[in-house]
Amino acid sequence: MTAWTKKDLLGIKDLSVEELELILTTADSFKEVSARDIKLVPALRGKTVINFFYEPSTRTKMSFEVAAKRLSAATYGLSKSGSSLQKGETLIDTILNLEAMGPDLIILRHSAPGAPHLISKYTQAGVVNAGDGAHEHPTQALLDAYTMREKKGKIKGLNVSLIGDVAHSRVVRSNIFLLNKMGANVTVCGPATYLPKDIAGLGVKVTTKVDEAIEDADVIMMLRIQLERQGRKSLPSLREYFDFFGMTEKKLERSKPDAIIMHPGPMNRGVEIDSSVAEGPRSVILEQVTNGVAVRMAILYLLLGGTRNEDTN
Ligand code: CP
Image (cartoon, rainbow, N blue to C red; front, side, top):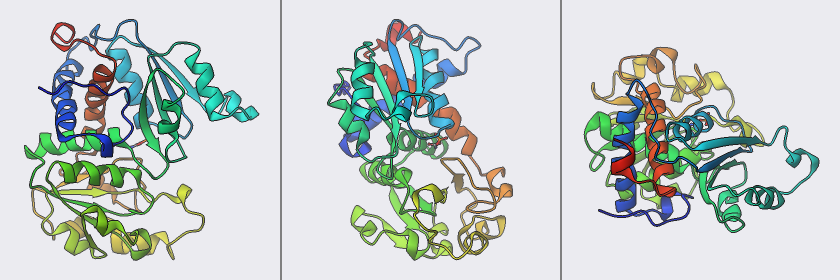
């Protein structure tokens, strides 16, 4: 089996198929740990993990925190608000100061693409990209892949449609890289203003028609409109967006009956997805969140060199 050798997890683009498979397989053991009454193993006892979130987060931040604690690591949180970043300290000085405290791993979410790659040069600790601007969100793509594989039994050959604000989504980019590497057929769909001109160059089918995107899909992933990343709105109105692109029970009548519905969260209900779909029988949205803990336990475990057979039993 492939051994993990990388210091950091910065993007899906850098990972081989064998490394992706290793993370997903390792997550299986940790899903089992998370199903126990006592959800605790000593695998990372004595390790120090810093959660540094420069942008808001609920799922990723808490999921890493829960994952690290279930592995017995000590976790500490830092956010922009309440830190000396607000007094003008630079990102590099912040990292040099954190480095002086001897962490084993720094998990960074930042609004600037490439920020995790930059800080990696200033710390001996491992670095995990928890979302960098509109660039990549590798751990989200990994938990999405884990959920697809769990629900559909495979990734190779699946038809996966990613629908919504493609232009501003780091989740889309990481999913495209991962799904292409693992042999899925990817379609992206959205209004023309949300489809980057060069997106077909990433090896995906492109359409502005939702019916076309969903008719053969095994997996339908709705994407959040990221108003915080748009200088001015690219849409006439959110109501019109919902009418054309929001996922409803009516639109789903055109899909395969066993197609699953995913969303990375946070959701804009009534904008990209109707509540009846988000909470409907085909939705696996909260299962994505559950799987996120197991996948992030696997990532922490591999990066911090735990010993699987002894520590997870
Ligand atoms: N999916 C995701 O990244 O959600 P958060 O922004 O809440 O972490």
